Image 1 (cartoon, helix red, strand yellow):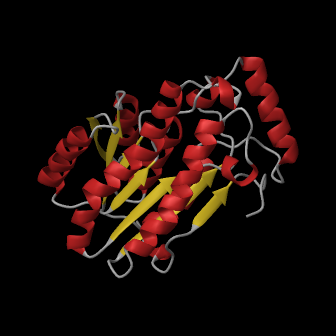
Image 2 (cartoon, helix red, strand yellow):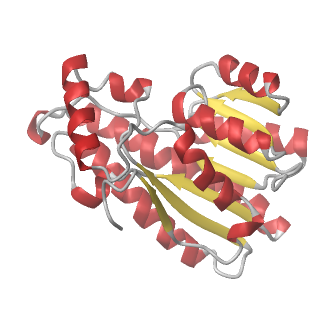
Length: 251
């Protein structure tokens, strides 16, 4: 087991891709803390059925006081934090950029960018004291091509890439590796809610046509990259991005 007894925080863990990360990390021996504003009961059940160890914390990742309280709880219970997977994300409904409201823009940025920053701000001091840590930020392959009708989302995911590269440099010599994963189109609940079913199906169809690997991406397709970046196998990798999209983009 590559992650035996390591403490792993996963945000956006209630469903979909975050749930897959929790399962994959636990299979490698990590003690997983599933974090979401929604209940993670299903994630906890699935991890436990698979023989893994997991706990859940319900919190608002946009609120600094809530994040601090969660950090204190994790530290009190486990005494350390080894892995942070910043996965929580909000996907808005498809809309032209000039029809997006200010509130919609702010909400996407608050969840996708501010929440990531707050978690790093909370947990990096602990990792610094330990002299080692792994931070994995989840972006999106939409940043490589620029996906129309999703400007707030794509802009927020582009910010995650820049955040990752800059933070990796700022933490040089600390023993903390900071990397990024860019998933392709994965049929999660969030994706299904961004447009009417026929539109989502059409987007999936044209995406599949453009992929080299001719099947639809599943949450489990992303788990291997995250486990790799969380493990000692990636000791000499930081500030980098792994693109996992079946060859839709070449990066």
